[in-house]
Length: 499
Figure 1 (tube, rainbow, N blue to C red):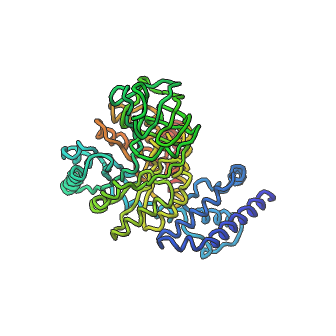
Figure 2: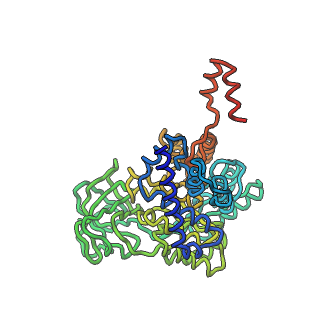
Figure 3: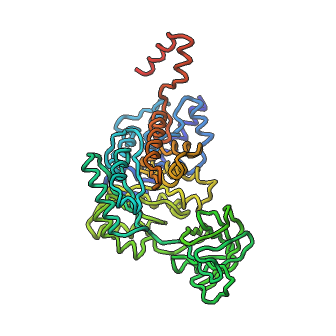
C-alpha cells in the first residue's frame, strides 16, 4: 500500500507541474494555429515528463501492473489520469484531458493524409522517391514507380533547373491521371551549399590526395599560396570567419576528419586527423560539415528565394534544408504567407542546432495548420556522430509524436540494394525501423523498383507487430505452431483473447 501511495502522490505532483506550466505559458499556446493548440499542450506535457530520469519510477509502475508511460507520447496527461483512476481516484469523464490514445493517433493520421495524400496500403508509411534528371525523359519509369507504390515524388532543387523540374512534374501528373493513382509533389529548397572545390594549383584537377598528418587550407581563394599547397574551397562564402582553433571540419560524409589549427580572414589551416577511405582522395562537390562551429549563415539563400515562386506554384509541400532555429522557419513562413499560400513546410533536421532547437522549431511550425519533419540522417549522422544516430532519431520520433507531427524517415534506406541489387542485413533491420515514421524516403537508384517492392514487404510485416514505437501483439505463428502440436484445445481457448 505504501508503494501505491507513493505512486499516487508522485503522479498528482506531476500533473500539478504540467497544469501550472501550461497555465503560465498560455500566451504561447494562443499564438498558435487553433488546430495545433491541443498538440502544443501535449508537447509541453511530454517535455515536462522527460525532464527527469523516470526509469526507477517506471519500474515501480510496471511492477504494480500499471502503465509505465512508455507509449504515452501522443496523450501524456490522459495516460497519467487513467493510472490515477486505477489507483482509486475519482476523475470524471469531463475532467479527462484530450487527446486520448485513439484521438492522438487519429490526429497524426489525419495530418499525414492531408500532407502526403491517400494510399491503398493502410497501416504502413507513405513512400517518397527522389527524382533526378533521368526521370524527366523516362515516363515509363515514373508510371512504374506509381504502380509499384510510390506516393510522393521528391525533387531536389539543388540540381537541374525549372525546365527539367516541370518535365518531372508533368510526368507524375500524367502517370497519375493514366493510372488513377494519386501522387504528391515534394520540392526541397537547396539551402546553403557547403560543398568542396579544389583550389590548389599543384593538385590534380578536381581532386587532392590526403593522408593523416597533412596540413591543408580551407580558403576563399588560392591566389597567395604556392603550387604545392593543398587548398580546399567552400561553395558557401563567408564560412571561414566563424571557425575557431580545435573545431572539427569534416569532408565527404565524415570520411575525412580535420581540426582547425588557426583561422584568419579568408583562410583556415586544418590538420588531417583521420582518413577513412580506401582511396584517400577528396574531390570537388563533396559535402563539408562543421559540427563544432556556430555558423551564422542564412538557411534561405538568394537562390532559394528566386525559385520559391515556382516551388509554391507546382509542389504540394516544400522541404526546408539546413533549418537551424525558429527564426529560420519564421522567415520562410513569412515568405510563403506573402504569396497567400498555405503549403506545408517540411523541416529537415540535419544539423546539431536543429536537434537542440527541435521543440522551438515545432512550436514555430504550429503557427501553421500543418507541417512535417524529415530526419535527414545523412548530414545529421555526420554532425552528431554516427554512434549517436540511433539514439537521436528515436528522440526526434518521440518528440514529434508528442507534437502530432508527421515524420519522414530519410537517407540511405536500402541504399545497397538500390545500387547493387541486394540489401545488407543491417539495411533490412534499418528499413524495418522506418515503420515508426509516417513516410519513408528512397533515393534514386538503378534498382529503385525492386527497392520499393522490398520496402513494402518489410513494412507490411513490421506493421503487424507495432504502431509507431509501441509494440502490438498479433498472433505469432511460432506460438501457434507449438501450441497446435501440444493441444488443439489450448489453441481454441487462446482465441478467446482475440474476441
